[in-house]
Image (cartoon, rainbow, N blue to C red; front, side, top):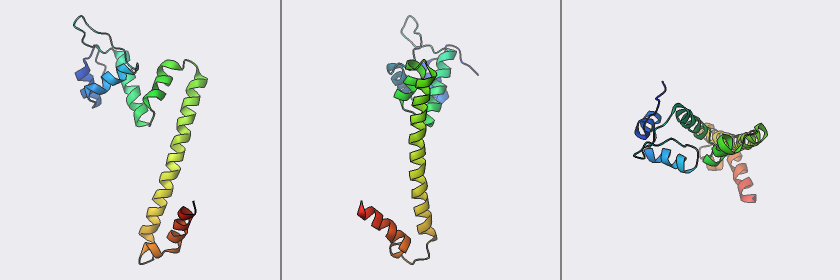
Length: 132
């Protein structure tokens, strides 16, 4: 359901954001809603779409700078792909680190040792950390 010419308060509520977030995105150049004679912002359908794209991008972990490149400064597909490939690489690294942490915690939970600090697997991990 599009809200043609919605106010900042209505859109902030719709997306579960504070109004200052929308103002910040405007300061960053990601939004440019027209203003009426009193200076009040009136968001159009295209602005609403942009807000939805920013929300999705932020959920995916993209920075506002990345989003600015994707939306404003990268008219060509090659540049957009470079930004997204770089972000994908960062996500893959984060997932690998999270997977390793989950595996370590799971091992400690499932370990037969009375005290995980005496577990040979844990001791080997500890030695790797101490050697770095």
